[in-house]
Image (cartoon, rainbow, N blue to C red; front, side, top):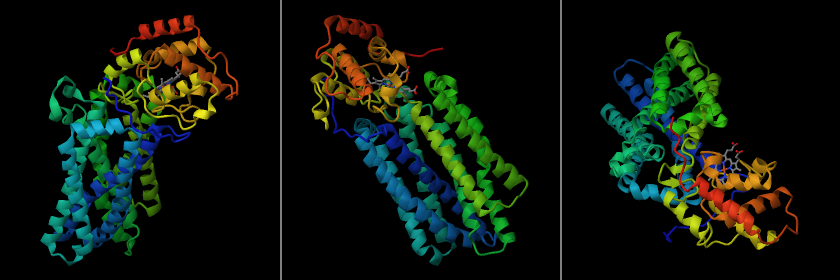
Length: 465
Ligand code: HEC
């Protein structure tokens, strides 16, 4: 138990850590899904071309691929690397655990990704010189490899929210094929196809040919938006398999998350309705500007959806295994005894700011237990959340953290840690004066906090209805 790993800490100012990784992640997911759908779409158009069913299909394939490679490979790969850089800084223990558990599966995902990149570049370089068989094989390789990179990563990411039988010792495969594996895989495939269709409509509008011929290509491309019709069902399936408490937040329990669910669903509905009713059924023409606008709307839907997926996992980064502040449930009980900062080796960057050792202590507690999800004054700022509370109200709510809001982990420290944190929040609220209250808390206060800590216990409240 003494082996709690402490990784170097980072501070992103007013941005909370979760938002940094969320921002990079959303961009990356959007581009990666576009690349996957793009592969399938190109395979479809290449077949149309080779069967002589669509005379401009080949021109489209060659034009689209340049853009796919430029955007999704360059920006997609850059944000992919950026994901690794941010995860190791923001959630080193989580990403370490994921790599430990899924080592070879993750390596397999990397192979799929490497094949995707190699096939993609090969197609850009020599695609035009290849014969029909060569072209279709290379595109099929590209499309299969990119879809399989989704297959593998999807198992690892969905495991974080719904580890399922893995928690009962089911092993790696039970964790991989977890309860939300299939709904999430199929949902993302449908999203990927829709993104590819919208991007295709943008590209088609840039091709130098008359409107009639462009319209024919658009009708073909818009078929790729058809799986969007399944999205409401897939979303319900997904909702049905996620944990009870997560579901209750999405459906009203947490207003922020409920609104994001609404935005994701509403935007997807609008895009789906336009694509299916307008483009497929009514055979409307879509201009480059409209397609770009829909693509932007799809980006918003992706962002909202990813926000919800990440948010629904709270207070865990791996449900039942690791809390968002990188502590395991067993370690919480241990730290109640030893104090939250007993073995934290890192000094504060700005220690001289604080007029007393207790406030320095409070800042370390905040860093260890809260700053994965809170800042002091910025996003989800603790000072603002607690400004109007009385001191005792603050002490009690922090001591009973998992009961204050069920998306917070239990407080992993002792009474002196709570008091130090409370004093820090009050000091910050009052503008950081040079002289601060009494240096040591009185014993009666500490005893009261200890009772509150005991009442709250060290385990998460299981929400069952
Ligand atoms: C897993 C992420 C997470 C962690 C870790 C976490 N919190 Fe929170 N906390 C939240 C979220 C999300 C909210 C909700 C904010 C809202 O309702 O706008 C919240 C709300 C709060 C509130 C306001 C509660 C209310 O009823 O208005 C306080 C106070 C608070 N947190 C204190 C803390 C303290 C102190 C720590 C560290 C000991 C901490 N939190 C750790 C996610 C977290």
